[in-house]
Image 1 (tube, rainbow, N blue to C red):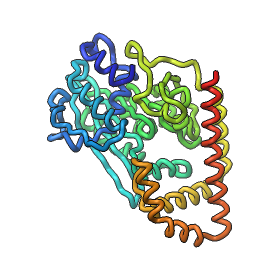
Image 2 (cartoon, rainbow, N blue to C red):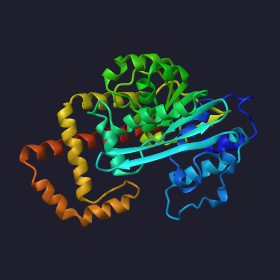
Image 3 (cartoon, one colour):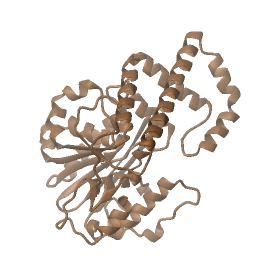
Image 4 (cartoon, rainbow, N blue to C red):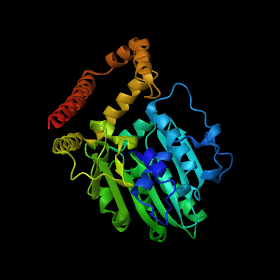
Length: 364
């Protein structure tokens, strides 16, 4: 079963009967993708007071976003989560500063779960993720630290659990590591669900070393996102119905008896692929990484592409603005043209290699 089916199966099972675990964490982490500004009428709203009948699902919406609605509808009628209050929802977006940050809290009488949202479908959100490859910290990470500090002040007597999926998991670890020692003592657990790593210097810091034993990281057997950059943090491998990079989708992770179905290790072909990808990244200087990422996303701007929600829309905009794109490329100097074309070719080769890895695994 998936997390939606698990929420339904566990709706009569209290937290006293079955304590909060990493599956509950994935539920809360995934709920952070929901646009709570559309349904919350006040800052603190118990799940049981959310009127699911007022949740209107847009006609043209992807499967993953339909699942966000289905998950929330299952949670609000669950006795397991009835005592949790939804609060402190924040959604900060700034194209100019390349920042995409969102977080929300789920609190009961004992603890508050701070849920950090992963990357959304906007070009700005993906640009900020890409910036992690050459920046010591990105704006969303700084926002996460400030957000956690505010929440800790509001919930002085409660324990804290941090969590997130994808970039949200990265933000949870970062916020915990950058907090002062007093706040770190209040943190019981940090759940990182297939979140990318950090630059190696991050793991040398005292703050990280203090909270490292509290981190519980889960990745699917074909993890790519969760293996990006440096990753010395121990992790558990879980089974997924998805293939290749689509295993990143939390709705495809397999659950049995309110636990993730474990897998012994990341598939050997994918481990080799991830090691090669990280070696390739390290082989490009920080300056060149920044140059390529800035140039790539400049092309998205030129094509007037603002999000990745629709492939058809992206192709239409690229075709519509083909002359501007062609002129932009022509205006680059020869060295930059060569660097950009070569890097794109290398990335496509990695994509092609990932498909070959999938085919080999299917034969096995």
